[in-house]
Length: 475
Image (cartoon, rainbow, N blue to C red; front, side, top):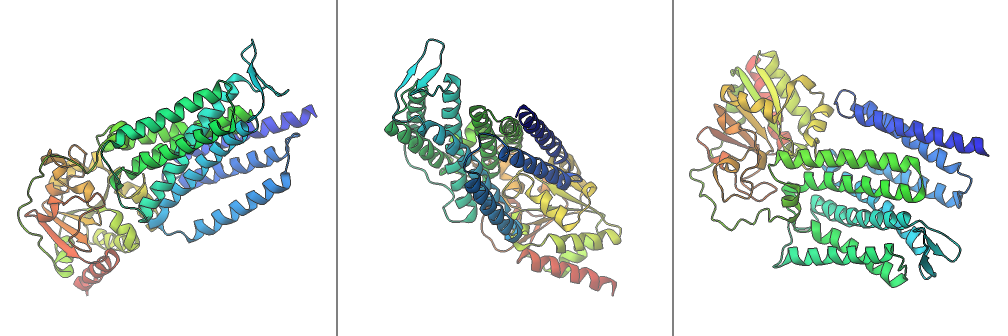
């Protein structure tokens, strides 16, 4: 059956190629949809090839699990709202980490209670079975990382879903977290050295899962984009390590690609917030000990009719979308309003902050869904120099990413985070449901600025009003 082994390896190579090409296509909004399809086809090829492995057992149970998982994913994927996409990504990512941890658990539990000794060549022997020393070490490492990703992603999901408060902190939390992690590492090292007892393995997984929970609970909502991408990297690494354990080329390549992409994305997200990854995970976001600056002035409301006239006769308008636009599902109406402005000769652009929304690329996905051309979408570094020449900046549901306190108040928890310089525009109109703070719980000085006006209301309703008022000008 040597030919079958060659065919399976060829299929794995094809799957890996499709994974890499698919990921490359995902780097551009124009080809991202095709990239997802390519990667999906690669996964299908890898799964079918795996079923053909000669030593595969329990094919019926595996097929049943695959059918259940595919059905659940199809159903949830079709029903989930765009506003809930971040928590779905967190949940699915956690499932990947949990699957990797389960592979490591199955491998470790298969040797639990057996007589395991280290041979001279560095190999372990367990009642006739001979796992490699590297195999045990990678199984432990993959199980540790996968467990942390699984439990941490579940907490991230619960936070994004609104089931948990934004942050849970207590005195000495960092020390406790460090002790839990140290305990998991010590137990993992003991297991990797050949001490494969059931109590030791169970305690190892308990501490690993506990660390994922405790590491994520104190992290504030504004850091969720970084956390999601970090756990994505963790899941990829865990899958790659368990791929070495199973000697499965497809898992190794897919996990490595996902881990590398997640790591780079995490670094980019942290850079966009001007914070280190360590500060995100172990810092005290939202808990500055200094006294914050007092914000003078009052929020000044504006009617939709006046706002529409202001933008209709402007030369340049920059629209800044945020999570509030996603909640209201207002992206289509916003783009309709933008098209009406463009027809009147107004130069319109959309400004996207790297961490706007609840996950990386959240706003880009929403605007692409509405049909906004890619050349009208500008990132933070490109658009910031244009704000002084912008007649009107229309902020729809964005809060923390346009807060000037990030540049002016050293006591602010977001101090140092790069922001969209909306305050530099000649006039600012902010669409907001009320006078509350953003997801990070920080008051926004922009809303009290002399050049800012507040258009209160739901994003969908406000955008519809602006469209109606703009159309009435031409009637």
